[in-house]
Amino acid sequence: MKELMQKKWVRVAALAALCVGLVYALIYIDVILRARSACLQGEKYWSWHENPRMKERELAARFAKDKAALDARHVARKISDDEYARQTDILKFNLDREREESSIKYAYIWYQTAVELFSPPESKWVKLSREKMPRAKELWKMELKSKNIPFEDYMLE
Image (cartoon, rainbow, N blue to C red):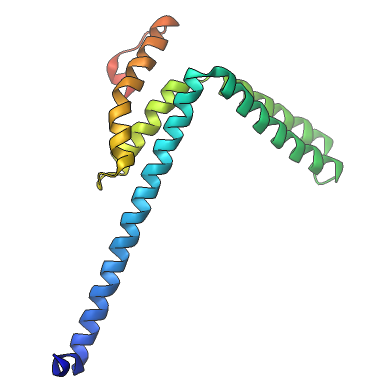
């Protein structure tokens, strides 16, 4: 074995194999972390569906934070009055849009993302997303029906 390791091609091959293994390990970890992130986003939106007040509090807090940053830029004269007014209108528009958006729709989309984009490997996050995805889709359908919004199943994919 010692004689074999003395040969340069064996050392290069071993180093290459080690590098390939390391790259695969990093990819594996990255995919699992991305699946975790997508699943947790789905959980956030599901909780917003179940508790609209939580959604409103989080959206209002984000708006206040963004508005404070915009105000600070305006006071420091980093943006003009016209730009400030335009950016404020954009913030308000985005807040209104996010309030109206369906939380359960986003929960379904994030679960679907975890399942379709970040598997394999079949991590616990992918399994959880796969379990919750059908129920989220059914809740989304019920929400659309309650609002008398016409749809076909293929439109929800």
